[in-house]
Image (cartoon, rainbow, N blue to C red; front, side, top):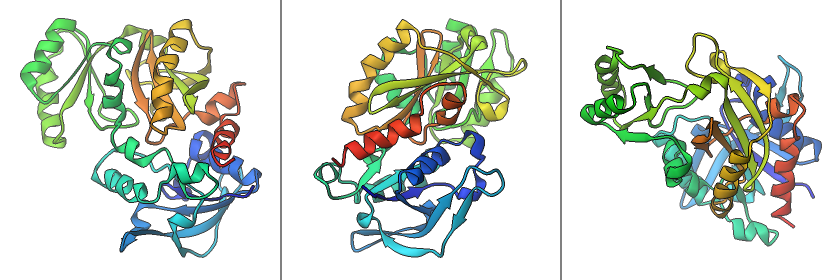
Length: 321
């Protein structure tokens, strides 16, 4: 089986390949003999209900500084692709939402399962309806105490209740705009003024969990099944554990509680067509369900875990058989 695969992504020249999950997926697809195409969201067009993109055939190699080769771009009807990977990075803004509307015109999971049609991964309509910091609230007993509000009065009441809190933008990503406000901190008013000026949406306030000092665990699920985990430990002077702000990756297993969390959410992930998901867990609580452009594949494999890129393509190819 040879699949034609279009990857909607940030330009491949910008990737830091050592830790990039999209690149890992492309390497594995190429190794299986699939044909890869590369395009950015601004190359998407719709004419009379048909979705096109200016795609460049691409080959990849795991060589820093020389990791891709692009051929001349050509106009492709995305309905002629077997698979479209929606892998551009958030933030989750109107441009991202518009891309989900366009790709929803292409996606036909039932036809793909019957051996024809195009499969968009993850399902774009459900991606649009499941922003990571909102989707997780469908499982309130699995997450820490959380407030979503634009009301400074409500956020102050929440801080008064819990003392230490995390305040962050609702549609942020990569740890951007995440603040740890400790009890007695006099910067909350200024922070909320800055948030109100910067973002039109509500904000999130969450009870601070000191367990984060031991790590913020990323657990990856393929087709609703947990397949690997990596721990991300924040730097000494950081509240955030994201790798690009100094977080340290380390090997780790999964606890009984984490298996419980995955068993609870797995069926719903599968029902919504979320083939590749990354959840974040601190202590005994899940803080986010990442369905837009999850990461962590290369780190898991580096520390001796599963080859998740291979498991991903096994799942996708299985939907074609």
